[in-house]
Amino acid sequence: MTLLEKTSASPDLLTEDRSMAIRESLRNAIIDRRLAPGTKLSEAEVGALFDVSRTVARAALQMLTFEGLVKTERNRGAFVSNPTPDEARQIFASRRLIEPGIVTGAAERITAEDIARFREQLIEEERYMNERGPAARRAEIKASGDFHLMLASVAGNAILQRFMDELVARSSLVIALYGRSGVSSCGHSEHFAILDLIERGDAKRAADLMLHHIDHIEADLDLQPKQGVALKDALAIT
Amino acid sequence: MTLLEKTSASPDLLTEDRSMAIRESLRNAIIDRRLAPGTKLSEAEVGALFDVSRTVARAALQMLTFEGLVKTERNRGAFVSNPTPDEARQIFASRRLIEPGIVTGAAERITAEDIARFREQLIEEERYMNERGPAARRAEIKASGDFHLMLASVAGNAILQRFMDELVARSSLVIALYGRSGVSSCGHSEHFAILDLIERGDAKRAADLMLHHIDHIEADLDLQPKQGVALKDALAIT
DNA sequence: CGCACTCAGATTGCATACAATTTAAACAGT
DNA sequence: ACTGTTTAAATTGTATGCAATCTGAGTGCG
Image 1 (cartoon, each protein chain N blue to C red):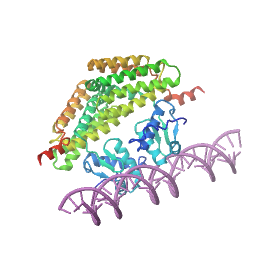
Image 2 (image 1 turned 180 degrees about the vertical axis):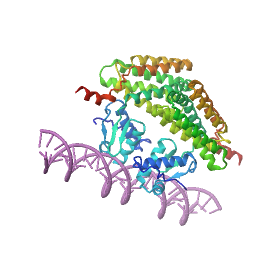
Image 3 (image 1 turned 120 degrees about the vertical axis):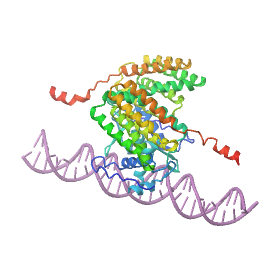
Image 4 (image 1 turned 90 degrees about the vertical axis):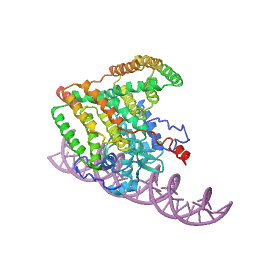
């Protein structure tokens, strides 16, 4: 566990919810892979890092467990999730159901200012795409997810927004684990195209394209159930 | 807070997760309205009822807060959720996106034994429908929700199943709050029809009917935003 | 040399103690 | 009487202590 920005960001109203802040910080660390899947998150360690008691650290870990970013085993502790290929498929199946609805919802309610903000976001995403190195790659995955989250936030359904929060976060984990290549080179242009269709008010086509977009993301994954027979095979070979 | 079955049910493996058991128990109490919306759930009281410390009670309340069945305000405590009409609409909008997918998933994977179980469940539901009294009404709402949950469980997507758990629970609250009449007299026959279509393998029509079914449930609600202008109006009148 | 066992260290589960905050009740002033 | 203030009770937020459990190194035995 190395560098975690302690989010001294907003000392205002939100600040007085420390377990939430820790959750946010760990969440970010997980989704852009500063914390690798399988990493143990001991209560004492997390508490020490953020200068709180185990009680608060524990609460944060519980929340992350609920969102599926962390798996806890009784009497053993909390670990960064290591999604299986099957879980990955379920994540994307869920997104295929929800995101077209998000898009049509967003198309109805989006404003000109929203669109401007989206364009900015997409340009930033493009910047990361053209950079090299693992840091840029992580930032790219994060930014790519943020597009979907922004869409969810303008769709005006808090419940779906929360579901998407979870799904996008877990997708980032999956992409980092199973991603094949220069991931979103194609995905990025699709973001632009989706935004254009929404701007034009063509919700139907935008939703369709979103479906394809999700297909493309999943198609770029290498979801072989390697672990399932690993032991048997290993024994058979030796 | 009156009678909460202490679920002495399974003293076996599952037993060693007390906060989970408490969550389950409170959850049931909330969705069939033994705990009315707005009721305060103090940590000490919950702890005393289940004979655990505040720590464990608190964890249970945190989980319920995450699923939206309970709202907690900082330094004030936890209260049974009192969903607004707007939240209600969001809940049903979410279900409209997810449940057709659940149905098609279930249609692919359902077995003959599953179908038999479903039939049993529907018959039990019918029994409650024909009884009188608030207890039967509560049982009816619960059983009606269980049909949707069983569908989700055979669809084979753990994530969607969890989402449905939350949505169905919150729907029960909404129906109890805003329900107009002999709620699911129509809804029930639709359950049968949906099951029949699934059995025949006609996933498309089953999904369509599910959509209509959700529409019918929501149509039976009285979602006037009464509170929004209540104060202003009250002042204007006097 | 390998295997099982034991025991110490570390970590989680839970209860409890204390500090911070809210609530409402008593009280005083007008 | 009524309003505003003060004060005490109750409740939540957080830290910490103890018991239960797990892990792994060391040890003894085959």
